[in-house]
Length: 443
Image (tube, rainbow, N blue to C red; front, side, top):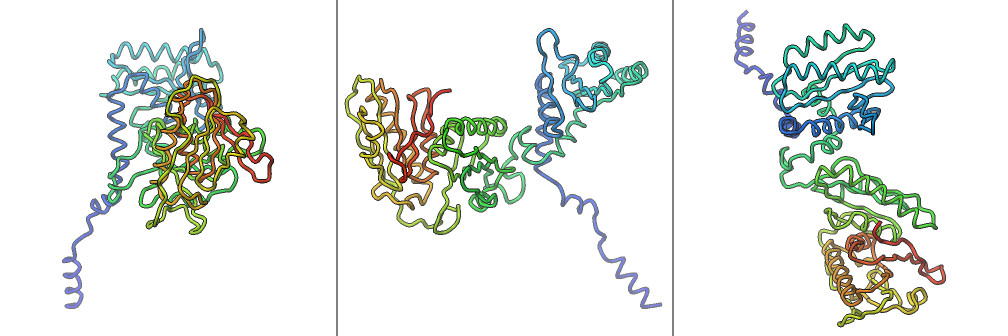
């Protein structure tokens, strides 16, 4: 008996587990920040902006959701979105000033109009509302009354709180497409880590999707990689470039609201690599990576050793020439672009400009600083070329270098400032070895 009493006293002396504290360990700071931003958006947005928010969330939550926009005399058929196969129609309300009489009248008009426009295909009508202080009591009575009148139609409602629950369930990438990127540092340990949207550009050789995570560490990969893989069949280059442009424009459109920064991993023919940079432009933050053949990795070396970042630009005249002609630009980084080969393509150019490193080599690129130097040198060469030849008709680009450098070069080409730039593909088995690839020009 004494032994049992001692055991009971020891049990009573033990501190009980605080279940509330245990639950707090699972607190998600990122989701909380998103919730605050969502509430602020709902409070400050206009009626049109709330409808756009609703559409963005629903599209990402269910691919069957269809947006409906007013069209001509038909209008929107009293519909702000629908699930066509299910016969579900949504009507969105977010008035700046919510008056009971006006709202009740609007519900009656829209429901009757939807029933008339959609006929027997209308099976469910959902009243979506963004009411900052709740809805007037007569609205619920009105919905119940309409349910008795339209017995074959299910009458439902969705508040902005219910819409948030749908947004909360989205994947991190989709949620960020709606509400923007996560707040840096909102989760412990990530204050100094940046997030990158990844573009994998591998029409020739597949790139492991684990490579970006390894190469970007300690920074983070945001969402799933965007795969840019135009079907590579030569010729025609034009179709490949058009397909690639559509893919990149879709990527940029999806990322428009999240202030994106892109990490690019490319194993592609030079014309397509230059075109990728041209399509991305220099208006978005881009970090290019290069595959290291010796180390079998995309990570930049921590100790790159001696790097050849000095680039020499020659061939640009000092004085302007008012002549209409073509200009040849040769970039020699991994190998020398021979003037004899380019002259077989462009026989009498107005100028021949060379951008060269001291010792061209296939392992030339060892650090991002070299890409920065290349971008600066090429951009300066283009600017000087246009000052020297304001009537220049075309620029012929012959590039021998890494794909990362090709992307950086493409970013420097502004189609509104420069004439069309023709990018050539090299093959030692062809005669002549250079063939025309893509043309960079304003659409």
